[in-house]
Amino acid sequence: MTTFIDFRYTRTLAAALFTGQEREEADIVFDLSKDDFIAVAIPAGLTGELATFGGDTLLYADLSGAVAIKDTKGTTIVEVHGATDRERIVGIRIGPELIGLRLDDVTRENRWTSEKASLKLSTDSVRVMGRGTGRLSRWGELFYKRQKPTGLCVQLTMDWHHLRAGIPLFGTMTAEHLIEQGRFRLRFKSYAFDSSDAEVTDFVRLFDCDDDPEIAVHLTPALYNTRVPNIPNLAFAVIESTSIHPHLVDRCNSMDEILVPTTFTAEVFRKAGVTRPIHVVSHGVDTAYYRPPERRKPLPGGKGFNFLAVATHVERKNMRHLVRAFLEEFRSSEDVALFLLLRPEFHTSQNNVALEFTDWEREWGNDSAPIFLWTGYLTREHLRDFYANANAYVMPSNEGFGLTVLEAMACETPVIALDHGGVVDFVNEQNGTLVPTGRSYLARDIDTIPYVGDEFHEPDLAALKRAMRDVLVNEAAARERARIARSDCETRLTWKAVSADFSARIEACFESYHDKQLQIDQSAAPDLTLVLCVMDDESAQASLDYLKETRGESTRVLCLFTRYARIDDVMRARKHGFAYYRWDGTLDNALVIARSIVTGRVVLLEIASNGRPMQVSQAEVQLQ
Image (cartoon, rainbow, N blue to C red; front, side):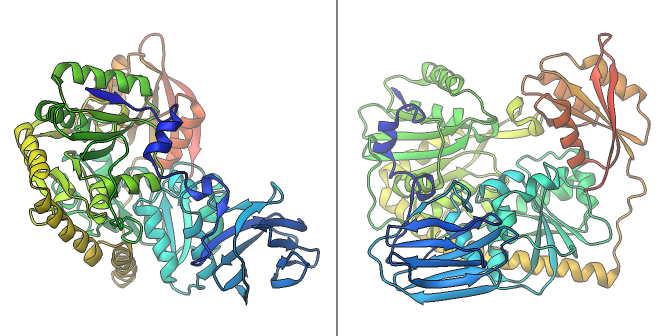
């Protein structure tokens, strides 16, 4: 029996299962038993009452450039000064005894007492920086406490979505700890959009400097990055499969050094022909946030023992194999359930996911234990609560690292993972359970187009069943392994430790570049890229074969496919050695992608009625 839970529409179920909204999704309420931090942006020239704190105090700005916190009688508690002809970003500290303001490099604090402090803006013109990202208080604290760095100026190239929304993956979390260290002056750049798009994000507005970069660090797959000339370039890259496109190998070899999160990725890159120095620097986990609860609570609506899996709905995650193993192994008479947080990828319809899941159940389910399926939005706080209160976390997927497994381990939850890929760097028989691989398969999932044609591995189904049964029957032993896992996270896998290793590699790369005057030969790099735009399900076979036969040696081909592309065309592009990527079907977006990925002259092509490509427009693409 499968129970479908669609929290996007059934809010009562969401309220019953989750602990509630994150603060920044509702009115911001401060916990006066500890220090809280926020940062607010005040537009140029704005004066008067800006915000109130629980009705007891207010944030005020005047024509002289003063920004102050006052009590209800109008008495100034704390005040800082700055220019009025530009936007002012003010850091605010709300604590049990002290209240403070920071503007530019000046901090003022004073004693205060209040029984409550909830922020309410008095005008829509004032912006709380980081609101809705899950990182509001963290960014506010970093801004308020930051020291002015004097070290290298490091340009970090990151995913625009991380810069915008604060997604706590390697890029954002590493950047946060670099800011906290005060070791480097930082510049930020997005690989997916023009610099103007990246600069408007809250993260960049809070922490960017105006200095010229001395080293470029690419916190994204090297496929998307172009080398910054005349300075050393260090790239962080990860791969989930054992196959690497030649274009990615070329990009890696255009860098001075490569960082990877696991030995698995390092071995794959070396075998594929990456000749640049490769160093392993792990991802990390926030052990202060992802932690075991004081008292574990059963997941509401679940059973006595609840397995948990969190994944995007893509092929390499092996969710269909997990579902099959659970439906075949556990009966409805048993006090056990599986919570499957199955997030669709690339806006795949929830209804399509539910229909596919129903087909799996019809094929394998026979009086099975229940599976609770969810395909809605998942906040970081909700995810942490799921990890912490599940009885076991199971993720038999193909991973270059496996961040969700590490987060579950930090919550001291027993984990089951595939004995393959990046997870074996931190999951072993002492701190978890590893399931051997079964058959291999070629990916044909158009929703993850970079992996189409790559080889992945199923879990050994019988072994997966045994592992889940063992954790259920021998829960005490599984909990002991989980305690070791938590200790491993605290000892060597915190973001603080990881970012320290990362900082050391940045400095070592800079020193090596200047000591050896290491230069990368770019003379053979093609200066012209043909970008073939394949609209929806239009057949591209004739065009792909035509380009293969007629393109010159100095010309390379980038194929842009929509989510309705034909798998056979993607496979043909792969066979011909063309690079390929997902796009939204517009020429503007095609240029944005080309500008992010290639240098030199770009020609956009579309498929003509005769099946051969025709030129649509031409643009000079400058190195970003």
